[in-house]
Length: 175
Image 1 (tube, one colour):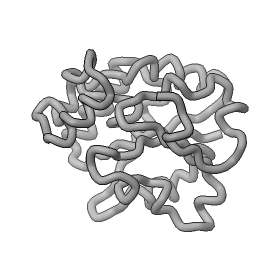
Image 2 (cartoon, rainbow, N blue to C red; image 1 turned 90 degrees about the vertical axis):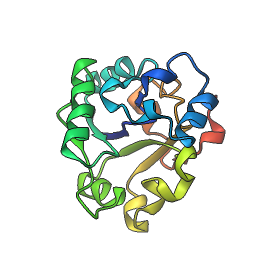
Image 3 (cartoon, helix red, strand yellow; image 1 turned 45 degrees about the horizontal axis):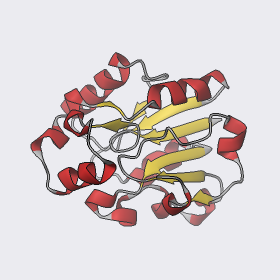
Image 4 (cartoon, rainbow, N blue to C red; image 1 turned 30 degrees about the vertical axis):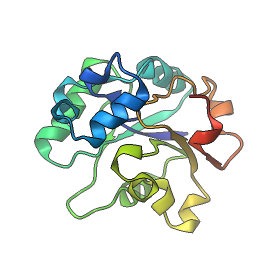
């Protein structure tokens, strides 16, 4: 089973947002607060590393999708993943110049795509899953979490995580 997890805003968060509410983090992102763009200082969102390690131990292959496109910023995200010992950190994927997220997801073809709702940058139009071709959508389970909420509340069991097939909306998940 392949799981693709968005990095910034889903599995990772900016350091200055550490002791703030999710809503305050969103406001900082919307305000384009300088620290939001300090990718080298990003941290795991909650217990993301433990959660993902648990899925990997159940035979999941993990891919990370970053919003970054410059080599320097991609390297910063890769370093953060390695520093905090995210499993399969070498599976960091990104968009090539002029490419959309959907192209990356369609290339990897994960069984499960976990991403945030992109609240601070425009919502659904900025997300990956809603923009996939219909024939691809039917093959990928979408799990949407609120931006900067983290993934701690998602099931530990891969079996639970993968069923029922379909879209999980953020409004159906605990805050």
